Length: 260
Image (cartoon, rainbow, N blue to C red):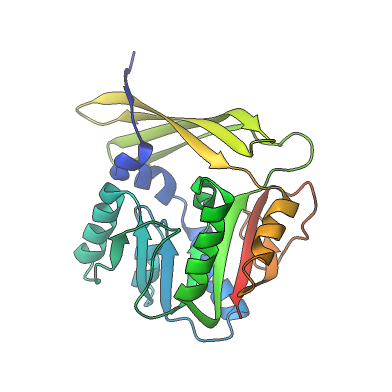
């Protein structure tokens, strides 16, 4: 039986990065396609709020973009900067709140594609984030924001599991929604990592709290930050050739927002 530890999955960046960084290519290709198709300015500088371990920032840096980001978790920021430095890139990732930050000069594009936006606990923080991002992106630039919307009726996916391996390190994960309160707009999700190394095996358990958004709720939020215009929407298949039309049953959505 595995030893069980309770703590934040974000405090274990090596394991988090293996699990979420192993499947990067589809997102990477999609980001580049969006930069070319939807930005009305050349995209050379890219920013990622709540960047975590920078699983895509390092790939973008290696592709020739100048990258930067921010995250609340110091361990993730250190992991990201160390990797950038290891490959000879500037360490431009800072510890910061995605709802309260400033950049020295605006960027050409930004992205936040894996639901981190929903960690913002209330409407004021979400609106503040969109305003911070509007200040961080130059006119004609784009912000790709991906999140799970709450559909009308029952969500199609309430649990999922996946695995990743690098050499002798194996991480198996399991995630399940344990409470979904539409009135309070709160979702509690249990997260479990089973970690296997040559010297230790243990289970890490965490509980994540997300704010929920229906299509109408997110549309209303976006309308309160007029610097942004939504110009296209996609699902998490990241297929640039197949945009989607939102309806009340939409769940996994990437919003392509252009800075006015």
